[in-house]
Image (tube, rainbow over all chains, first blue to last red; front, side):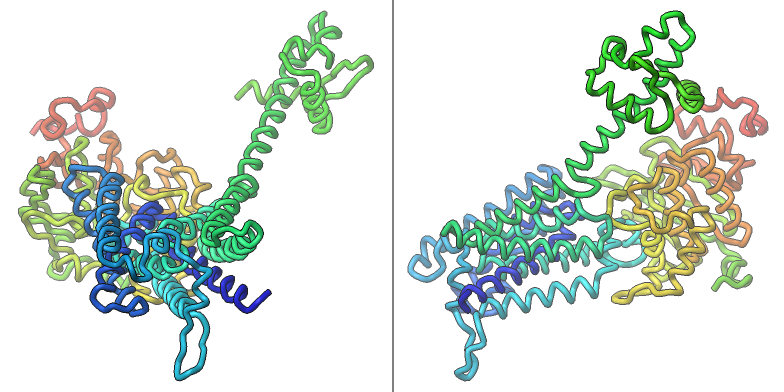
Length: 370
Length: 266
């Protein structure tokens, strides 16, 4: 692995983790799509600031971009408050307006600089290592690694410092307000953080895929745990895994790194959805199956009890007959009878006859009495 | 702050909560219209009224969560921003996401966040208080449970514990009995009486009219305007209820022997 590969992967991990951290609260606050809107509208800030300072590396760009992100949030809220459109429509109206204005400005006035539309949409993490940060002739590594590392540190600090305020205002905004923690203030500070993160990630992965890095790892982590600190840690871990596997997928396919990272994040979510211990698809299928057998076992004891003393009992209470009476497949009938026998509810006699044990009789009566 | 003098209510013996000329409007539509109200300290007060009467808005106005169009609210003779430490709020259970990834103890600890303050985290002392509050509502065995595993009654008890841990003097509760089982209802009433008996003030939005005389000392009957307020024995009359509910007071027939009908038609 060359130094270049290492730098790209390091940057990919830093970008992904920096995005996943605020993503946790975006998911919990049900604001996932707002992050997409932010990551698009910040482009306007970048373009306007670029026209002003004429330098793509100026920190002014980050500040201007974050400001446009907040402006977008405020505009969405103002439009929503007029009650003429719903919130989702307000988001869909505001951010394309800001984004298209930015695209217009780029294509009209900035066609010959680096700021081209392709780079805006998809970013290019592969070129990031070529833009070095040099101080007094010393090479300090890729410039974007420093920017993104700073943003990651900022996110960590913010979430450590305001963990409890974020938590209470997300869970119960009414209580937060009653206790004097302004949920509006927290909301805007947090949106500012999301904007700054989106600006940083923008350079590496473009405006479209930022939302994947912000939402997919926390959404996966949410399925894996019910504990918030663990959810935050898992989000960071899954983000790092997606970043590195994305890099190697891109390498294998000779394809876009950003696209592969987002794909990997999507695959991680798919796996979590299928295999999560409690909330996963497989777990709930198994649970349903267990419940079905468990219920059928009680139905069987009731059936046996009802026919126990009838003259037809020797005929009725046979394993082979269950498929006729209870309309079970022979295989399912055997499975249920096995389970009931294991639980001590019935005994098997000769010729597949089924006898209730005293315990089975009691269970059937108890179940019917409910 | 929980000394007997502190519990002995307000300096000068004034009301716990005083509302003057309160009007709240959403888009020019009055939700509360010129409300005057005094809440007696050391009493259990119910707020009753039909749907859309402005009960929740009244509670939220007292807490400073909605901006009134007009009026003045004083808590223990102070504006709300200087009295936040004296007030505990129990919102409607349905207003929060019970699927939120957190534990019972953690939710109760949120009650300590105000005094802990910005940046800092609750520590061991707060934890001990939170567990004690859970014991008061009979939920200490559930402290490590995830909140999504709780029943409606258990959720309500956790909310109550979160209010208790604030060690406030005034408790504002929005429908604390909504959708809870009978056992939880009894448990909550017991805790509320305990609070009152040590001098605290409880104001609760309440739906089941038939339990008002049994559970509460005072009542506020509301329908955008204040129809009546005062001791249950004086103002909880069929006539007042008819004014508030527009002649349809379903429960009055069901419990014609209950205290309401015992009252002289004054």
